[in-house]
Length: 224
Image (cartoon, rainbow, N blue to C red; front, side):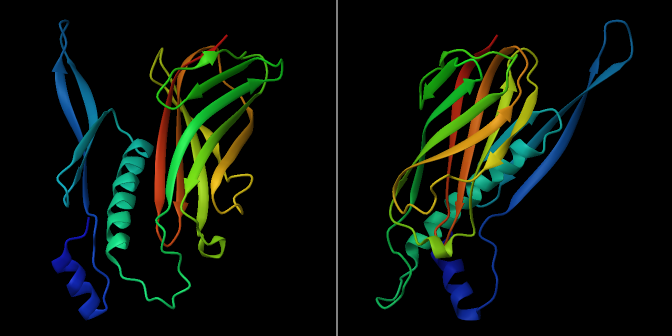
């Protein structure tokens, strides 16, 4: 969250000031092999200078690092916007917006279905021999003005447990995003996955005058 001193400076000067700063390092470590020679091991490290939080990923990573930084940026922005006093005659909606990914459902063309509620595991399975449809339910609380939305997007990823391979499945916008509150749904079609066991990761972001973001990790999707 932006501290009050920096916030007051920004208001007085009318200039741009940073509220989230990150240091990203791509590190390596030589590992000795028994039969001679060296094996180079890599990792990615990111550090948030404002709150001191850090995270690391094995290997050279891009998207997970970006998503982690974006998550902290939105949290900082939410805290900052809550401190801003909005004039009574302003048309800006004052209610804070909250997003919560509630569930993920995956269907194949043979009517097999796997469902996962937040905090639980997938029940059911789908086939790798047909195209898949992935849908996620998003609960929105706090009315938002649809005229002020920059974008409202959901990204879906799959991580194959056998080898840790990360797959980008696609992006979509809510089917009924004109609805001001309640449950929204986003759907991706014509998705292909090889046989295996996966973790499905869903990230949704509302770029609004009060940004909101949420993650959902849905575990143990069985694709036969």
